[in-house]
Length: 551
Ligand code: NOJ
Ligand code: CA
Image (cartoon, rainbow, N blue to C red; front, side):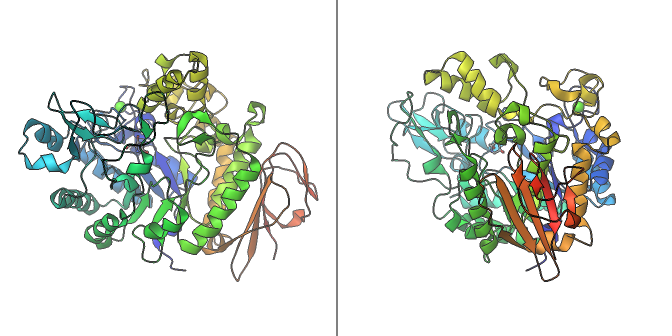
């Protein structure tokens, strides 16, 4: 087992727009993040992943980059960014940035040049094809709705966009374009960041554009994923990317690559893989089909457990993962995984935390997860901000669902659920800002905020601090970081149990993923961590989670 520095980190994801506003404009910013660095120190965080803060028109909240070399004025300046890196460093915290290189904003100078002049060298930085009499080259649907193609003026020439039409995809076949991206990456690494999270990286290669897909909805289009994601050969781009950038630094790279078959994980994190770690998405979309929020599944705990265990077994054979249950694209975990609203409480939230936190990999916590924020409930589409949510709402209606049904789907899955302002205190605007925030607040702040939870030694927040401590401390840390993973075979779909072990010790992680009591033999004397105060021999309480040292 190679002990790379990033294996022992505890990571935290910040959604900059909603983390902390320092200047009263209702939008989170870099100075706001700097003002909260001591909070991370208090929690025990060692690595921060910052969502995109580059100059952007913010159609997709920064995932549409206009200028890779500048910070958006909403967030601050390059000087603020450098200050953040330095201030974090004083507290032994490293910063990683979001790297969005599958696409740019349509306001990026390259794209502006490309559409202005047919002979511009930038034309070939993007993916542009002839249409059929002003109809798109094929029937692929973009991930955020509508055709994946957009006509440039009235030219019968179309550019491809996997996400919104304001996010044209870059053409990775173009060596000049690639070199410009590499220079930019190295420029940032030289500034002292510790690495990157790579956005939608497995979309950078596409298949043959002549293919139409079988229509799968009333718009006559087909989901584009089969044609733009995880296309065989994409790994050759990874290799060059790594060689010309990341390999020159001792940096960390974390991929966002959804939908990668297990036999291709090796290209990411195998012995000759190209990245440090990959987010494990195996159970992330268990509730929906093809990432369409109105196509709900009836997933079961049995299925969950099977996917969960198979995934961990395989990952251990291949390489290193980033483990997580929430991010800025997902609803709050407790809402996704605990179906009955009455069971969404301290116990189920801390159980979910234990379940993923001690897996073999680097754990990531998403802002607000550590205080147990839940989804909101909104009644009208006007209260939503996210482009994808709006697209999913209208697609549901097009598929024949009522407005109410469409609202229910998006309440369950909207990305806005994770993007409401961080709940710092019970004060106005949740202590996030002195003025009205850019997005409507979540209503559950009274019970769930940082200030109150710091004072309460039995809070979710203080439970997270314990998790973090156990993974870092001298007694258990080594085993929980570098130790092996093994499923504990228990014939109950609602008990998720595994061991982490090495030659020094064996730690069993046992989670009751249900609201019923379960009979199980264990010795309470061996308990290292418990989300209940009292423990009954041979009984697991509802949503109880324990860690046991059994040798
Ligand atoms: C994945 C990001 O996590 C998501 O927020 C974004 O909308 C898309 N990639 C497009 O960049
Ligand atoms: Ca601000």
